[in-house]
Image (cartoon, rainbow, N blue to C red; front, side, top):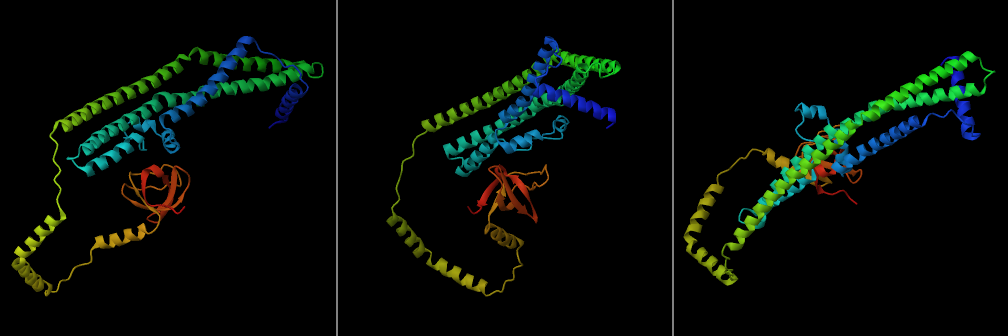
Amino acid sequence: MSVAGLKKQFHKASQLLSEKISGAEGTKLDEDFMEMERKIEVTNKSVFDLLSKTTEYLQPNPASRAKLNMLNTVSKIRGQVKTTGYPQTEGLMGDCMLRYGHELGEDSVFGCALVDMGEAMRQMADVKDSLDIGVKQNFIDPLQNLQDKDLKEITHHLKKLEGRRLDFDYKKKRQGKIPDEEIRQAVEKFDESKELAERSMFNFLENDVEQASQLLALIEAAAEYHRQSCEILQELSGKLQKRISTASSRPKREFKPKSIRSSMETLDNSQHNGLSYSSSLKSTADHISSVPLSWPESPTINGDIHQAEVLDQPCCRSLYDFEPENGGELGFKEGDIIILTNQIDENWYEGMISGESGFFPINYVEVLVPLPQ
């Protein structure tokens, strides 16, 4: 920095000190300018808070919120990204219902109802993905751009204006000791900065209809999400009512107890009737056992032994593919067995797979052997 620059910095610091400590009066700007400055300050704060609150509204889970912040909307527009990269809670609930519904089978009314609801919850997860991506593209990203460019530029002009005001006030109070030419230059620079700051604030506030349009985009995305969710739930409600009505109208089966005594008698009779058959089976088995057999080592057995070794220590099974997006994260595929080494917090584990270690989200895995308390 030049000597003149250092001198100017000293003047500004001296003037600021006298205003803060001694209560010296600085040059007051007009009321219109002060009102615009106040509105810009409020807008800046509102944008900062809206960005934070909107991501919390879309994803209450902190881990998923971090993923949402890293979502590449440009890739999504070009069709290079098919999902948000993190599981929705509706999808996790749907997977759980589908799993147990299929286990109960088609002859179970409750099992069929679980399958119906699981499929509906998966559809709602897809709708939620669309909401997250749409709001990020049409609301969060434009607000972020507003904060990073327009508001940042206005803040720069206001900061420069304040510095030149301090320099002007310092020289004005020392008129006679400081050459008139320096005072005149300070006035010109002060006026120049005031005009730049005033013009940028005026243009920004005159075009605030753009921010209203972004709010409308948020409302329309939320309305579309709720409309599609309502359609899915209404269709599900109709299916469940139909299943309940059908199950209620079909004749009830009679319970016929089977005694242990009758079961044993049936077993004895079958053993008696099949005596000669059992004997022939035994002789055949003796003949087969006399033939030496040689079996190759099965790789599946080795795999089972390896899995048994893994299950002897804290570990988990992955429910989904996880692609690391930050340094220190551990990537894996669905179904992989991961050794658990530590729990970082309520949302992240630390683990190891194939000699590599790193962090991964808790809701991506199912714990098989928990970490020691």
